[in-house]
Image (cartoon, rainbow, N blue to C red):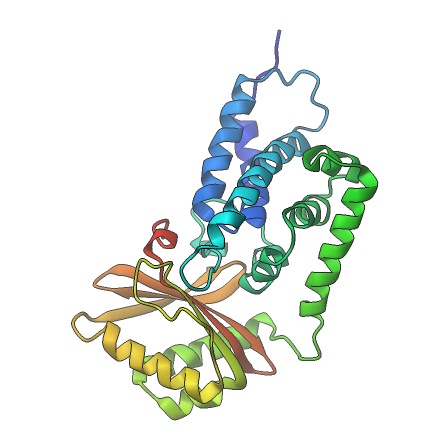
Length: 290
């Protein structure tokens, strides 16, 4: 009798399926769609000969995400303004279990965006999910040696950013800086913001053409602080705002609401105790799942 996927077994592996798709695409909505497709495919399939169900499910998700990524690259070339990954709720904020590692952080996902689709898939499948290169090659349509080379190149790119000669914040320091940033923004304290921001700070906003947002990076600590406060005055002139700390991509982040609805999510890249990069997602399509 054909073996079909039991709901309880699917629940056990769902986080891995979603996690593979999200790491490859950086989109919660697309990852959810692919997860549903994998569930339907698995439910219709005879799994009698499948020796490693988790690997099979992750491979199916990766193959579909690989196809989607190649078409998404063309769409992102015409994306309005900077593109940022959708905030992925993790920890106690997550509605369902989520696999967390450095590949879901905003800073690393932005590095992954610079890789070729093959490099990104190879890195995710081998380094995050432990699939052998023979199986990775099956997804990419090449040889195991080529898959190994793709992963190696991707790993070097990620390491080059991760190992820059600055000291990244630990979780406690990150949370402290985020709390100070939140307090300074809510108080409209320009001097406090300037002290928190690195002189080389970069501010990226993703409005996707759906809402008003800067279409180019803003650089320089003082300049970023001035823009942040000017934007805050404009955004909250008519409706009160509230904010709360969340966990996104395994790191502390700030969810800002206006009139009770999600307005933006801020994630910070903190080094040497100061904010080196501020990423703000304003595109309402990327906040819908919140």
